[in-house]
Image (tube, rainbow, N blue to C red; front, side, top):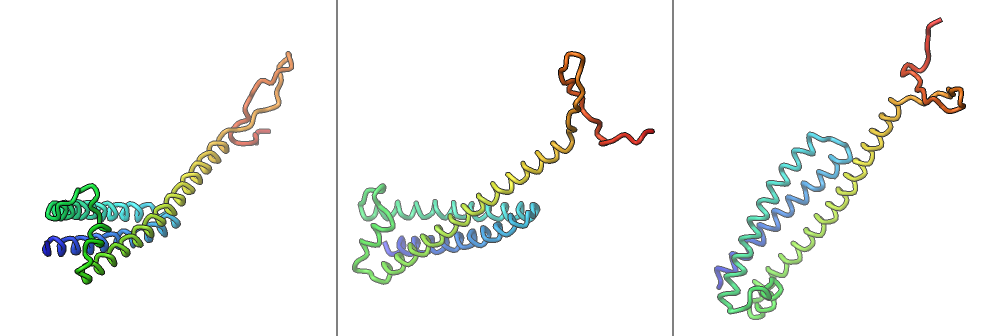
Length: 170
């Protein structure tokens, strides 16, 4: 059981470090989005994908260790959480304190990453809205207004002015 506890603590520490790396990348991405630096944004997204892949692997390892601990302690796996383990470690205050600190650190880091991701999503949506506005503006600049030409039945003919704006021929 002691080796499983050490494994769990090590996996949680590694997971926390990976989330801290993700937090740093997310902060950097926020600045890049504000600057509209697309090539740098692509590089950051690639780095984020590598970190999230590492986090996924660590998460699978943590789940395996938690499963093994549940089997050893003869506990139902679906109810076996980190909080359960912390409460079971009443006679091992050192490990209990380590796990409690890791849980708090992970929770804080994850909350920070979540907030940063929400901010980045808002920034990206605003950038997309601005691009859409620019495209609409460019399209409207290319189409000329219609003339006030009427046919003999007093209907607008719908003629469009030329793209040059005026005719310099005399």
